[in-house]
Image: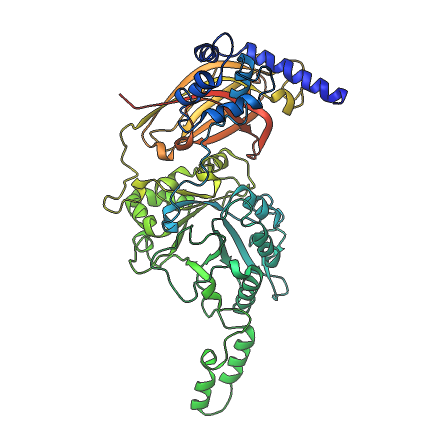
Length: 559
């Protein structure tokens, strides 16, 4: 080991011993309860603690022994208090259940919330940033399952480009985007990727795009042909398949060459019978050999019927479709048609997208959309706002596969859920924030304050239905890289199935805006009871190397 590595290791041990010295009374008392003569053995100690206190019912004595064997201390027949504290603060003591994909994945696609991107090709704002396949790749790596591409003719009108129309965004070719989608679609999840196309192509370029899509994606492209689904397939049956969703175009097989021929025929002075016969090119010319018809690529048909909300939300028992609404359209519709939206989303897809004035690529509160059963809540993934943190939190559930089964109350066809009705309390979540560690290693030592250690505080709250929404704040711990708060917060939840636990750490600044020091968002339905090490993320949602909190979670029923 180099001298520098040794110094870092020594510094880490010294800092950790400081944290141990500040260990909360709860931790010390637990060690005393499950140890004997200063040592926590396997059977009556660690294993018993994991099952009784941590509620890890499936844990075996072999699992407990592996924890002891993995600790860097002697003797090997148990844990002393420092090793016990190290285990509690380790990455293996995650706050979230590690069940992998555990939701039923055999229901129709409409029964799931789906991790959905908006303008997935943009590197920055909506006005003049570059278009690229890089943000598409990054989104797929994070587990996003719906990629949006706006496709337009290029300046020569001979190819399809991807860009945000009517802006100064620099384009990227459709082929490049498709190639990257194929390469990265299933690096994180095997469940299907949906490409939503906002199509502004001419008929001849639609045919070219169809050929490009077919040739590039090959066998992984799911093509239903002329079939219109009466019910959507399931994520399980569509594993490792890519699905196209867009509006069915008019005259989708008619190319520019066909148009010219038809115009020539119409101006021909031949007799009416011959002219009429030639003026029906689709019945006489052979189908294109290199690609199926453009409309036959579309598995999820999109479109907004003529008329008002009643027509838009009409449920057809013979076929399913996708409807798109802006965040403002959804808010207005929710005021008057809440139950109709829920009924619609039980069979059909609803995509919600940011309002047009969000030129900075900011996002909106996704809860109103989820509360009404919207499957595709489209977000600008290149942003780093608090609403995006909620999106990341929602899709940490179900093994981070990009699909989360909707709660049963949104799927009950016999009794349509009314989002406007306030429901009774179902659960009490008690959250204790003990202490934090890791900023000393992940931040420059003058990042928060050039002259003294930082003054950290924690914000803990619930994002969910209006009745559950709450945000609380801890005391400020001054001048400490290892802050100890030892504070408990209590949250009464009416809909824990849609609740997300928000955690943020900030550094208090008397003269300026408080500094950001980490955040995370966890689905309440997957939080593990007991004392857990909670890793924090940066503003973009990427995990810090060392920053984490020691917290305790307890679930109780309301009295």
